[in-house]
Image (cartoon, rainbow, N blue to C red; front, side, top):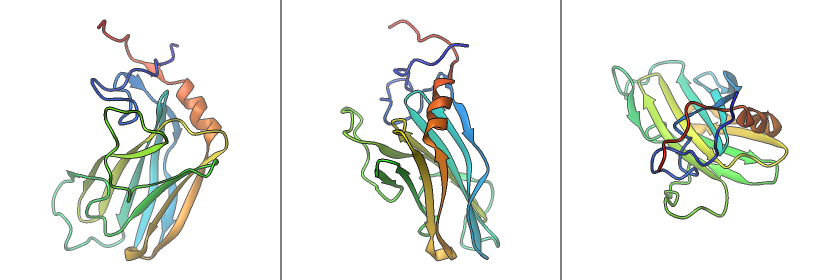
Length: 183
């Protein structure tokens, strides 16, 4: 089994902005309950690792449908738009803290000095909001904590811890789907 080339980001996208397109990410975790109240639940539904970073999905589920929410099938949205104050954070063992509420777009043409939490895509309906995030680069030694808070839905600050070593191990096992096309 071949491992992936870390330089293979999506066509034209630098690795700090998105997962590589032609790489099958290594599975780290799925379906971890992050938080729950009488009104809502927040679930870490998947975490995949790539040679250049990791991607995770959060699902925010309301116990009772929101009558002001979108009716019908989910539609694309930005990951933090329209979720009524849901906050998602990632903390590394070295003290680095990243937040979904940080709205400045990451630079596309200059490699950032530090880690990034980049919103990728989201969809919503009246009862569920699914959001995917990209974290660049791979975490340092120690645990990675995924945290959330949703005061508007009585969800207190909660967290789950994932082994940084497990994330790096899954990234090392990522599979390149096919070789890069010649330049």
